Amino acid sequence: MWNSKRFFQCKLNRGMFVRKDQVEFKTLVLTQTWNTLDNHQEQLNLKRAEQTKSACDALSILAKELVLSKPPLPRTLSELPTTYDGPELHWPLTLPNVLSMMEHFKLGHDLYCILLTNGLPSGTNKYLFNGDFVDRGHFGAEVVLVLLCFKLLYPNGVFLNRGNHESRNQNSWMGFEEEILRKYNTTPTTATTNQAVTVLAGFQDMFDTLPLCALVLNRIFIVHGGLFSARHVTLDQLNHVDRFREPPLHSKLDQDRLFEEMLWSDPRTIHGQQASVRGAGVEFGEDVTNEFCSVNKVALVIRSHECVPEGYAVLHGGRLITLFSASKYCGTQMNKGAFCSLKADCRPEIQQFIAPPLHTYSRVKPMFPQYNSVGGDLHLAPEVVNEADMSADTTMHASLEEDSLRMIAERICEHKSDLFRYFTQHEHAARNGRVSRVVWADALKAELKLDLPFLLYQSKLVDVEADNTINYS
Image: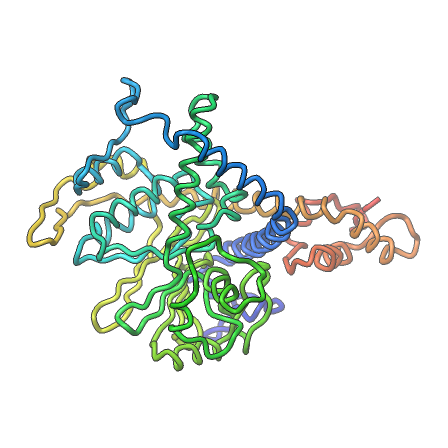
């Protein structure tokens, strides 16, 4: 009920209240389902990575030996083919040079949207990018290169925090490693293969230098993941964590736990802490956030790491904000993106967006057509960018549902024997190899360890008999 009107009647799901005029219910269900499945997949992949860790370490050593045994970059700039029409950086680096590179890349539309809306980075228009620059996208290399160029141009105007995807472990199965090996291995020769491995190693060595957190205006703590399983953690402790290495996982050492949790933890509406469904970090409650803020005399925690429908979520009595800047995440989600502006009074101003497709930007050429430098400040001429056509919601729904169904089907196949055993123990008295629809859904929840609305997807996963039962045999 709301304002004496009943919008829907069903069992509450995690205490979520939905206003019909604010959020479409189907979108919320699909998004929640996809996020749950994605977190579960992350947990499975982390377990598999642990099982193959020794083999991966051996391969890494061999790769480094290969790189060291040959010239690191067999092709120099002077040896570029005459047909090359890509961007070239010149030193000392200049803003027009970087903008020219951006024009060529036509990279992630979310980054373009933020820079067009909020202005380019400069000595006075400062940015802090909060991790996860790579994986799950086609332009990870380009995004990182652009951010690094702006960091070189404005060392005190651009700051980069490390996310859980800035790691060799994640890159090996989430897309970035494959992206680099594909982009820098244009011909199947030993030389270019070596070049691709060298470039990948360069990116990952750079990731090892990124800070794990930041303190803004002495009052706002910014970290990619979240807070900690230990109590009374201080900023001084975090400052002494050795960050120049591959992020540790499942270590029992205090510093390693702090490192892991800064990249992986998530806030929840609980008291204290509990194990994370991701298989790394912890889930922490409002009391943990309040204690951290009190101990360290900070007013607010800002973190990222989770896709949220509105692009941001205010939690824990307003002491914590989740900020997620990738709209339409993975090309299947329906979420908005958001970024936060902080003024000298520490009051956060959050702006939401749904980035239009890149072809929309092509109507304005070049992307940043007029600028001039006055006293170190950058002034952009105002441009009007037409809003993207939002009529593709139906297609996005279908894509999101299809991706969710694929992940469910994969887990059903992985747990086939466990499901068969459950069905035989709960089948009809006639022992005819059939179970009710409710038993089928309960079996999937019990054996797949996933709390999802399986009945919603039943018609697309199995055939229902005339007597409303499911033949599992």
